[in-house]
Amino acid sequence: MQAYKILIIGSGFGGQCAAIRLLEQGETDFRILERRDYMGGTWCQNSYPGAAVDVQSPLYSISSEPYRWSQMFAEQAELKRYTEHVIAKHGLRERCELGANVEQVRWDEARQRWIVHTSARGDFEAQVLINASGPLSTPVVPNFPGRESFAGASFHTNDWDHSVDLAGKRVAVVGSGASAAQVIPAIAGEVGALHVFQRNPHWVLPRPDRKFASWQQRLLGLRPLYKLLRWAIYWGLETRVVGFKYSSLMLRVVAQRAALRQLEQQVPDPALRAKLTPDYTIGCKRIILSSTLYPALVRDNVQLHDKADAIAEINERGIRTQSGAQVDLDVIVWSTGFDATDGVISYPVIGRGGRTLQQAWSEYPRAYLGTAVPGFPNLFIVTGPNTGIGHTSALFVIEAQMRYIMNSLRALRRSGRDSIEVCPRAEDAYTTMVHREMQRTVWKTGGCQSWYQSRSGHIVAMFPGFSFTFRRLASRFRPAHHILA
Image (cartoon, rainbow, N blue to C red; front, top):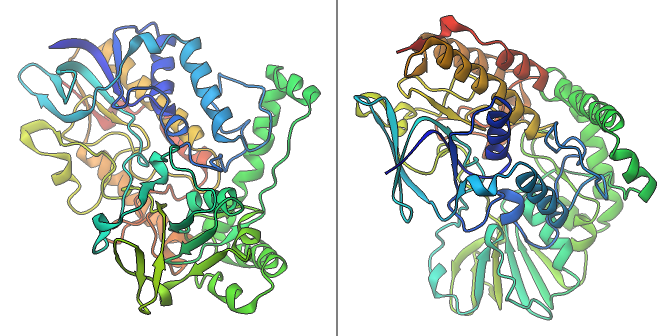
């Protein structure tokens, strides 16, 4: 069994941030476990056509790692290069175990250590466990009748099969969320026929992208200017919280009107426009940023299937719809999202007294600062429950979580004890506050069902307020909220 002081599960931005902060503290006795045979997480895994970030790149980056971006909203290839740059700069590849798919973690109470079992790399043990596997890492494909009988190619956007040539093919994209909105325009001009199966329409706002000239890229290399641009973008985005939480009128008058204006300008057919018009308040579900989705959907070779023409079954030839129509296909692309609500961590976690995280979260996922759970000592969850941000960069919240994690590790080190654990009272007070504040948000009042919501009806993906509020809460370590043993 390989032993380390700290194990980090996942090598995406969460795992990279954790490793960088540990190195800054002089901590080198750690190992990153990555289930795939390469590092990098989301932007190395998601290579589907059109993949790009939906937050401005100068903000969607690690604060200590500025970069000369080529455009405001970076595409996947550039994000992959950035990720690999960060990994190489900090020597993280040498600290990573690839192909280490975690199947179970268990707290050994007698030894005060986490035992981590992997499928191909044996067992590891560590005093501290940082889970950075990410909430959007386990793809979901609906179990439609006959799904396995399809004779053509089929794959999820999360695992795009680049060996399949789409030129001239009959293709279905199942799903209409953020990934589908990027795939559809990217392939619509290449395929012979494109069938888009939409369960519910999304609100779509224009994407204010731009290429940076070479002189602008050089300016991005100047750290003070880079930081200034980051903060300008940050405060511009932070104003959206006013609409999400405090002013539904602002959402309807400003954002929703802008979305409707783009829809009317780009979709002249009133019947198609009606299919694409949501029946809930903008912001209740993830807002899509795209200036190319609607033009793709009005192409002659593209057909939109809505709820009235939904999938009844999959057969050898393709898809049969609820109306009885047969849609013959060569390729089915599943753009159906991830298990992101009641399954924040995909592997079993067994804590103090043999209690599992699944049992602790039987009603709904919950954690102190979205990071620590009573009964699970020395376990920290990156992008845990209620850490999602619908208006700004997820990396801002990840870095706020790092402040809490590093402060906790410092407190543990100074105490000379073996474990640190959040008090049940502190976690309960924090979670009660989160869900009390959630009642005022569009995610509760906007009239939609989304992946933000758990099966219990609680909004468990999002933080109900300004991101600087979360950062303030995470920055101050409260000893009274913790148990050292």
